[in-house]
Amino acid sequence: MQDYHQLDIWQRGMAYAADIYRFSAQLPDAERYNLTAQLRKAATSVPLNIAEGSGCTTNGEFARFLSYAYRSLKEVVTCLELCQRLYPALPAQPIDLLIDEGNQISRMTHALMQRLSTPTDVPSA
Image 1 (tube, rainbow, N blue to C red):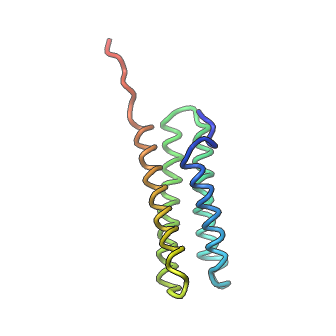
Image 2 (image 1 turned 90 degrees about the horizontal axis):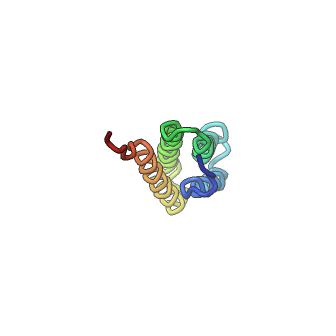
Image 3 (image 1 turned 30 degrees about the horizontal axis):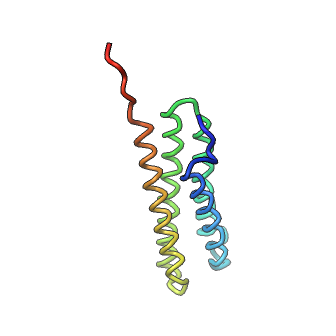
């Protein structure tokens, strides 16, 4: 289909995954195998699914992989909201910024899914 490196959602997804890795390193050691691992897996899934989907041969297939990325973004945001509840001593601003960025990327992803799912105009016979 296209070079995923050119997609804004892939670029933002990559930056977001790196930000999530840096944030999750601040979580308590007791969360290493729970929230830290879950955050990292879900955040990594975003650019991976976008990249994989960009290699599909149809728009429908690409939209399916974008839906995986979209759901992973929702998972990341929910984990961040859980971090806010479990660890109120963590600085609120970085978490709020990560939640906002996750929501923005998910809106972009959803919009691209919608564009790919909309049939192109077919000339009538």
